[in-house]
Image (cartoon, rainbow, N blue to C red; front, side, top):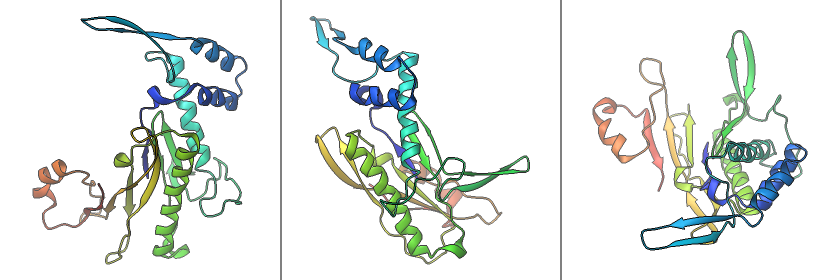
Length: 240
C-alpha cells in the first residue's frame, strides 16, 4: 500500500505539532515550537500591494526543525499501522515483531518489515503465506488496512491524496477476481470526509523470472505498449 498525505507542511496545525512533540518526549521542544508560532505573521508581497497575514497553521518552509516535526507525523502513521486492522480491541504489535510483515533477508539476517514512511509518503507491506489465508480473506485484510488509514485521517483531520494512494498486489493467482478497494479521507477542498476508489495494480512474475514493472498511468501505458504487448503481467485493475 502506498499512502500519500496532502499538503502536510501547509496543513499540519499547531495542536497536532505540539502533540507530536509531546509523543516524542523531547522536553522543551513543544514549548519552543508553541512560542515560535505564537502570533506569527507572513508578508504577502505582490506588484500592487504588501499585506501582513496571520500564520494560522502549517510548518515554516525551509526550516530543518519543520522536517523533524513532519517526520514525527510519519512515526505516528507507522505506529497506527501496528494496530490490529480487524479487531478494535486487538493488541498493538511492535516494530521488532510487526503484524503481516514481509521477511527481508540481508547478510544472512532476516527481519520482518511491515511499514516505511518519510514526511508525507508511507508504505504498508502486507505479506502472508498463501497456505495461511484464502485470497478472499486477504483482500478483506487489505481493505481493513485502508480503513485503518481512513480512521486516522478523519480523526485528526489531516488530508490524504486518494488519487495517489495505490494498492500493489503481487502473486495473486490468475483468474481470481480482484475487488475494488476504497478509502475515506479528510478533504481540505470540501472541509469534510470524502471517499474514493484506490488505484489497484496487479503484478505477476515475468517470463524470465523477474517482476514486471507496474504501469501506473495512461502515459506510461502508451509508452510501454510495445514492451508489454502480449503480456498480462502488469495490469491496472481499478483507479480514478
